[in-house]
Length: 271
Image (cartoon, rainbow, N blue to C red; front, side, top):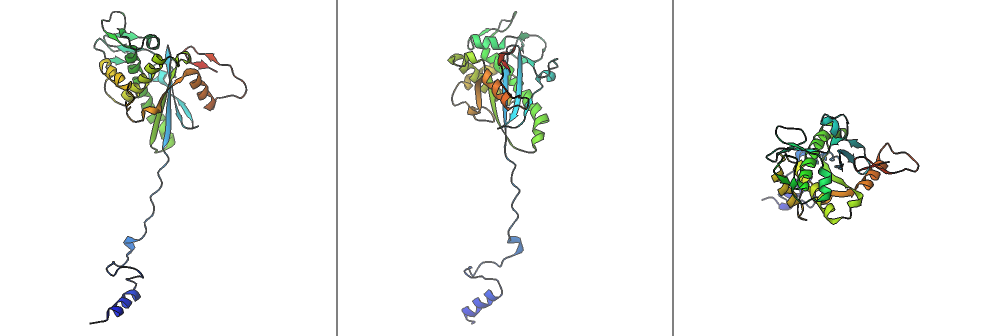
């Protein structure tokens, strides 16, 4: 029987067993050699949707954070309006509670969505002349903004995101509220519930019927509510003047020197 020490020396000499290796370790092969590291993933793209929910018209802007380009969404053009970036703040309501931003058969327009929301957000009111059904202003505003968010995200996927390559997206959203009402607890909480529910419904494809919208709004009032696709803390209600100034300061159209801020016709501000 050969001496085990001689066998060990022969294995070492043949390169099949290195110092400190186990006797039953298989010989190295090229297949087990080092592999090339996978290419690093591109950084996550942080996009913020800013909504100016005006009394007569609504605007939407998408910005790549923290200081990337901003894109005004052509809501008006997409809705067939003369103003490219302004969509009328109005909602078509059918007798069965179905809603749309386009006229559809029986029903009528509700055009004072924001005024109702700021007067008595949780009190049901007759939606329009000739209607027998009453709806809460928070539900009407949510249905309208959910439709705007859906259209905005479709436009973003087609026109804005391709500019940044194949990158995962993290969303946030700011909804403007009149500065004079920011400290009014009831109004601010109503706007916050509307913002959360509108984002949640805007991420779905189901019809925006007011009975279902109302349930979502009630759920959105809870601190535990989880909107689809993002954390609830990423949805903010901000004073309209502050939002306007911040957007202008970050835009490529800003100009040096002092500025005058005056209220805009949509309840926003012009610099």
